[in-house]
Amino acid sequence: MEMFSDYEPPSTEHYVTLQESMMKGLRELYLAELLCDVTLVTDVKRFKCHRIVLASVSPYFQAMFTSTLQESKSGEVFLLDISSTTIESVLQFIYSGEITLGLDSAKELFVVSCRLQIPSLQDQCSSFLIKALNSENCLWMYKMAHGHNNKSLLEATLRYISCHITSVSEADDFLHLHLTDLTKILSADSLMVPSEHFVYQLACRWWELNRSHHACFPEELLRVIRLPLMSPQELSEVGEYIDWQGHMKHTKGLELRQGMFEERIVCMDLRAREDLQLNVEDFQLDSYDPVSGVWEKIPSLKSLMCPGCLTVGHCLYVTGGIHQDDSFSSTLHVYDSISNDWKQLPSMGESRAMHGFLAHNRKLYAVGGSNVKGIIDSVEYYSIDDNYWVTLSNLPLPLCRFAFSQINDKHYVIGGETNGRDCVEEHQGFLIYNTITDVWSLFSLNVVCSSAGAVASDNKIFVIGGWTNSEKSTSCMIATSRCFCMDHLGRLCSTCPVPSLPVGLASAGVVRWKQRIYVLGGENQRKFSNRIYYWTPGASEWTLCNEKLPVPYQGVSDFGCVTLKVPRKCLHSLIPGRKRMGGQLASS
Image (cartoon, rainbow, N blue to C red; front, side):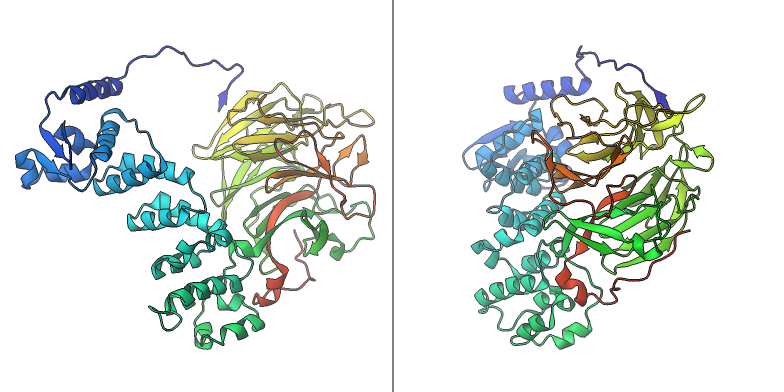
């Protein structure tokens, strides 16, 4: 564990490194044409350079100069089909590490760097092209990446095409794709399409234009169309041109495309626990659609106050929490929005509530919290792939009710409550956990916040609301309306101002939905809220939604709140084994 109280900026004094000295010297030798032992010959120009330099950055040149090829003996390498301007840029990069790129030059240099096997230049060009992706160039970039087997550019272009398939498919280039390229694109799970019928229509458009080469609907295309996701009416339309029945029998699995999901805000346990007349079925989860403003029910566990909730794709995971009888839970359950059903998984090593719960690299981290022993410092994670829990390094101090978020491989524990000498007190600080090294670092913080919310966006963490005082003996605690932003180093960001909430709120549901940050419910001075607010980074104020939390009383706090991908309603009847509403698993 590392302890830091003050931040010391690094020295600005610069020392020339051996690498810098070598690069400078080699470039000067190249420009002066000194000690050169090979010449690259292009259509109109000759470039004197050094074998050892070329061989050190290119397996292509290394193999050439260490073989019995003519080039290794003559001292000349003929590259007559590559322009002198391009070779000059390649050599400038090799001898200086610098390159100036435009869209056309990046394309040319990408192809040449692939041919000459210069990975560092290939990566530079690939990064530039990825940033320049748009609907007009993504298809030729995809074909170029596929032709040169460049993984990063291939994945980036496929992601872009999948995300913008509607606009991309309207281009003439889409209809002139090679069958292999088209089947690769249409087979992607990431396609943002509302239905499988849309995919079928894209395939038909391509087939109509390419019938001179494919008299029958290509079997390769038929294999990537997920026929079980089509309605009887849609299959009837398909049957007019294609004999699909035999193909349907051999279809394995059922994966929904990315565009077949909608993102909802899900709230768990909005019911007043003091109402002893509530039945198990009254504790259903509530799902909110920010687009339509409609609330709907989804199956729930029994009542769990202050549980840990997170989502991975279309799965909602719930750990711990407090039962109606005030006992603490150690269970882990998962809700699959495709099957509309709950499943119990292995329990945590320690029961906990008011804890942090985050997912990273298919591991679910449960951090701190509280149980019958009081505030705890234990940390563990559940491996989705291995189906078991692993104990990690403890927190530097017991903590609960903290804001919890992550950026890349780091977890951020902000504020919270810890054990004082005579009572519980606010922790005026934050911790950073490195998931790779399993090391906690503790830092001071000049603001107090417990029961605040936190969400990450664009490598920043936005902290929302929370309690401002730790006097548990006071008749009512005061919540703050303050919101602030932290960067990945834990520094407050003055360049990214966050407006205050319209009212002070603590223990609210705080989630990121697309580009917005939503705040639902919460409490202040023993008054509960049923309001919903949202803020878009860059906006000057929060927006109050017309909808309210679906509760028959003033408001609610300390409930689970996440965003979850759920299948579009039109697909529910097409999903085999999907359960209807009704019936819950009992948590233990």
